[in-house]
Amino acid sequence: MAGKVEVCRDPKSSKPALKTLTVVAAPFTIKDQGLLISSFPSCRVSRRPVFRPVDLRCDSDPKRIFMTRISIKFLTLVLLGIACLVGDDCAVAEERQFPQATPEELGLVLPVAPTRPGDQRRVLVDDDGNLVVGIVHIEVGDRYVVLMPDGQLTSKKIAETTLTDRPFVAATK
Image 1 (cartoon, rainbow, N blue to C red):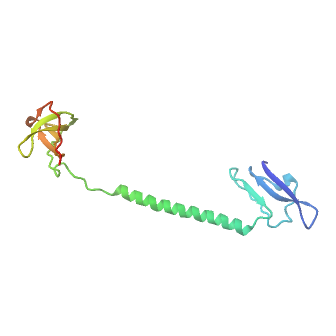
Image 2: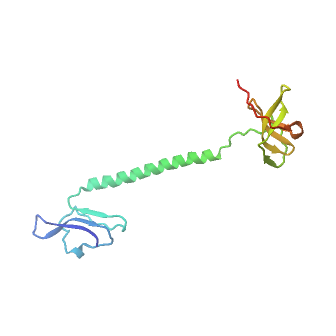
């Protein structure tokens, strides 16, 4: 048996008695130590799993031990309840469907076709009829999604644009 053993004298008799026993391995018996425990009614011997040490004291207060155990169990239940409530909120959030904008709602005309990334600069005509340089973000079928100098994304046909080496100049306000 591993642990700590302290022996004290029983005040009613001269027999040695168990004062403190800390056990790490279970099960155990008091007879192995040759000590008397029967004269101390407040002493308790309990069998617990190996991973939990047992602290047995003759002078310990049973009410304090009981309240400590109850408070630990209560705290555990409260924390589990909070975890369940938070878990339910997370599950509800995953089920929510958030509104999503379609390209048509943003004014982009895109065909159903394979896409390719684009990093080119193209000359094209803006809404005011001016020639501007835009940056191609993606190519979708026969159209480009182009970043205009004013910061808007627009969809233009490939035939309406011309490849250029001119730098992209953003519009300032």
